[in-house]
Amino acid sequence: MASDARVGLVHRARLWAIARLRRSRFLPSGMPDKLTDEARLGRPFEQQIMLYFPTTLDSLYQLRPWYHALTALDASHRIVVVFKDSRTAQIVRDETGLDCVTLARYGQLDEILALSDVKLVLYVNHDPINFESLRFTSMVHVYLGHGDSDKGVSVSNQVKAYDLCFLAGRAALERTASAVMLYDAAARSVLIGQPQADGTAPVSPSPDPTRSTVLYAPTWEASQPSVSYGSLETHGAALVQALSGTYRVVYRPHPLNGVIRPSYAAADARVRELADRVDTDVPLEQSFADADVLVTDVSAVTLNWLPTGKPLLVTTPAVPYPPSALMDTVPLLAPHDDFKAVVAEQLTSDPTAAARAALVEHYLGDPTPGVATARFIAACEDAIALRDTAWAERQAAGATGP
Image (cartoon, rainbow, N blue to C red; front, side, top):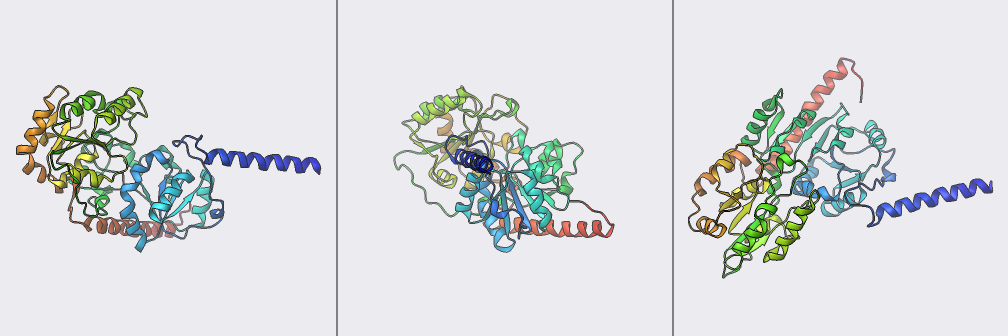
């Protein structure tokens, strides 16, 4: 008995030590801590809509733009957000008030969904771990993404894993239809606009009265060489040095800068030193409001900027990029261009202003505040109705399964 007691004590101490380690700063933020919300086990989800987010703190930039739309959806159709990392769950819980649950093991998700009446599952990225949720056939699975762009990764064969994809505008539908073989993009895509932009309150600019402000917002180096559109190494320091003094240069770094290449991290550090301001804790909307012109890469930032109507320059990437209406329209900034002269021309005459304005609806749908959020909620309701019809037919046919 004494031996059994000691074994039990050692086991409990070990579990306590593991939990402490997972909660500590020594566990990398990119590794899920897998601390299950034990109190939620054995109980069904009360909600019929689930958002699955198995990634960690490093990927929160993908979920945060959806906060407004998700809280609006939760007000009429309650949702539960499922994580594998309790630190990420706590942040989202604090920032949104949504019901956030951490389930460490696949079997725990299986157990709870078997007890629940979840009908719709939403995803904001293509993380391979999504397949732990995608296997369930009693629900409709919808890919939301985390920002439309002309990047090559904005079209992927992975869309076939989902029943439906909610897309911003015609540009995304045409891009998917032309790039993904053996996929009926028209039948499986729902155009909702960009509800991520609906939660933006009017922002007053805080400009420098003596100089125009250039916002430099490059993308990261990317995990795949074929879509490495980031300009920090090809343009970064030289661009900021050329513009400094004449212009107020604000640098908005991508959250993942340098996670793949140390040289990219070094380029990021150098630009931070040179810029007049570094926007790391400022909302994107404030960065946009403060700027008179944007210099960015092939990324979602270009489309987010379009409704501002202000001048836009896109850096010429070192790798090929997909053809698109936007890239055919905006001026491209090559590494050896006269940066100061090109920026001055855009601020003085903005020669592509009318052409860019014509692209807003093509890429983003109706940008009128509130329209996209209403379409998002309606699309979720339609997806649930579609599921209910298909599920009833399946049950009537005597089918069984998860």
